[in-house]
Length: 49
Image 1 (cartoon, rainbow, N blue to C red):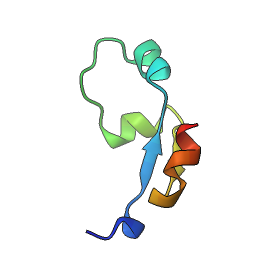
Image 2: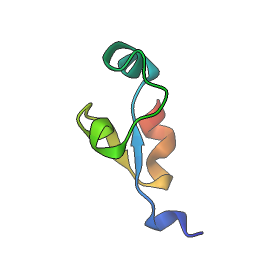
Image 3: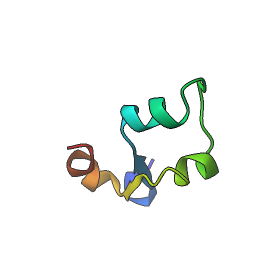
Image 4: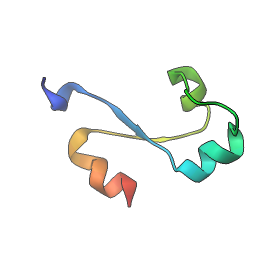
């Protein structure tokens, strides 16, 4: 598992709860419409802050 090849999408729970309050899961296309922060594994800590 080479995490440098992965792409992560960071989005606050608040946005998810406001935009998709009844959903338990979300697909990539729906997630991308919510404008998440796209980052690499090494950038996750900063993206979450």
